[in-house]
Every structure is written in structure tokens, then in C-alpha cells.
Length: 439
Image (cartoon, rainbow, N blue to C red; front, side, top):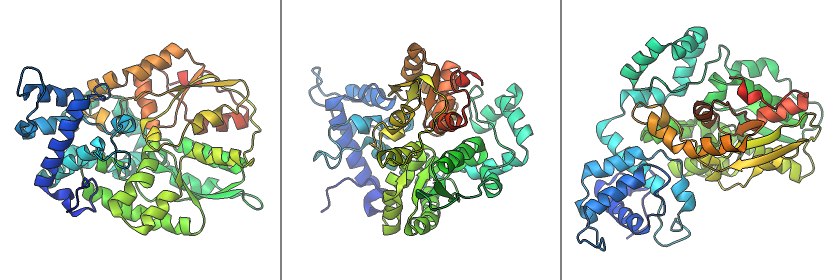
């Protein structure tokens, strides 16, 4: 009998309620004996509080995990926002230890089973479909952006959708990046140094097309050929909210498109670390196909890709302006991919630039921080990042994650630039220092 944990939907045990309960009891007991992760999110304090309630003696030597009520487990699940920090720091993960603990995947599995039983809540259907929201909002961008800043409308959104009235929301672009790409990208001259399939992400497409245009410019300056390979959202919002059916559908559609580009020799570059995490880590586990594995093997982060060019002596180093003291927030989902400090290394190539790495969670994590019941907690869990950024007294702040940048802006008043934005400005000879203060 297979004793490995059933963490992936392709495992037939994934949907077995009794198997899940057994795994919950096993891991909760192990985590209760360790307690290393108490500081990362609300799930662990709540878990340990419940554990202490069910201790069978005054010395807390034995815990009867079987007494955990379903509502105890559900509270722990709801408080997990999939930052992955517990997995990064856990010494007992699959492949490293026989206990094979993957707490974030256990939480995702529990949430998926709950959603399969009760259905996807309306709010999660909306937040889980950013393409639909983006298309609708882009058609009426001025009105949508006004509504997102109007206090009366935000009160309505909080009541109707459960999106906290004070949560900063990104603006929508009247013209999506995909439409701009078709008119802006003219290709490159001569033999390319490399060729990429640009998975621009829903955020770039509908909220930040300027970041997409900066990416095109940086690639053009490095003689990299680009094809736009964005079909739809990576599926992370649906996956995070337990809607595995929608997440799997998104994975299948994107893999079908991206696998053709990979077969043609292109590298997949995904702007958002959460999206590259989905393509590189989650897609093979959602689908289990050779095509998904091939896409995962050729997926990279933008600065990771540029760092590879630098390692080959192929990176254009004609940087004209520096960034001074940079407080670089390294997103949790980038840390989870274990690629090292590529953004720091690339930004350090700019003149008169010194990068300080901030390895602390912003507390945003997909759509979790947007929800009414999570907003205040998200600021609490992002507090360390806010403090370290402020204490660094930087000339400019930076983050690879556009959503983390919004959360940091909420917590510090400074809007971190994306590293690609910094590189594009340096190539153009434009000011970088202080640009994060212009909100």
C-alpha cells in the first residue's frame, strides 16, 4: 500500500476524506511536536492553540489529535495563505525526510475537498477569474478605476463581494498589453541571442501593460526574440481558493500553448513569481503529463533569465543610470522556487547601485489579503517586511511581485518598482531614485 502523502489531484487518494483526515492528524501531531513555524502565519498559532486544548496531561506530553473537530481543522486551513515559508524552513519535507511534510499542500488539499463538497463561493468565482474581471474593467477603465477609489462603492464591494473597503486595488488599463504587443513589437534585427515565449500574466495584461512594454524593451536591448504566449490566467487564484477544477482547466489550456513554444526551442518567461511557481511547480502536479513537465523545465523568472545571459557574457550592460540604495523585497514564491538571488545580482550591475535583500513576506498572497476577513491580518503578517524596508532608508524599493508591491505600498506608502522597470529606465537613462514615492 502506498504510504506517501496524497498531495496532488492526480493521486486517486487526493479526494478521499478519510485519507485526508488521517494525513491531517499525522502532520498536525508532528508540527505540534516541532513548533518551528509559529511565526509565519495564523495557521500555526491556531493549530497549536487547539493542540494544547486537547492535551491529555498537564505536562503536554501527549496530544489526542483525533479529538480535533472539523471546525478546528477548517480554521487552520482558512488562515493559510500559501506563502510557502513553512515549507522553505521545514526540515522534514518530501525528499529530505521520511515524514514528507508539505503543510501548504495539505492545506490546499483540505480546501479543495471542502470546495468540492460545498461548491465555489461567489466571491471566489469572481476573484478566481481575473481575465473576465480584467476584460470587463478594461472596457470601462476610467469608470472602473474611479469606482475602485470611491468610498461609497468600496463599501458596496465589501458588502456584496467581501473585498475589504480599505484594500488598495490595482488600476485597470484601457488597452490590454496583448493589444499593445501586436502594434509595438517589431521583432529584432539579425540573429537573436535567445528566444522566449512571454507569459505576460493577467496582471500585466489588464493592470500593468507598461511593465510588459518595459519587458519587451529590455529583451530587445539584449537581442532576445519575443513571442507573446499569454492565453489566460495561470490558475493560481482558483487553485488558492480550492477550485481545482478551474485550476486544472487553466493548466491544460496554458500547457497546450506553451508546450508548442518549448518544442520550438523557446524559454518561457513569466513575469510574476506566483505565476512562474504555478507553471514550474504546480502544473506537473496538477496534470502529471510529459508536456507539463517540459514546460516546467523551460520556465523561468525574468531576472533569472537575464542572469543566465550575464553568466554567458551576453547581457547588454549599457546601463546609464543607477538606483542608489535599493531595498529589494524578495517574494516568498520566488524563494520557494530556490533559484537564488538573481534579481539582486542583476540589479547590482547598474552603476552606483547597492542592493539590500528583504526576505520577509508581504502578507498579500494572491487574493487572500483582499478579503474582508483577512485584510487586517495581512498587514500584520506583512509588518516585518514593512519595517525592514522603512529601516533600510532606501533610495528606491523594488519587488518582483506586482501584488506584493501593492501590499508594500499599503504598508509603507512607497510603491516598489519592478526590477524590469528599473532596468528599462536605466537603459533609457531615466531617473530611478525616488520613483517609488510617486504613487
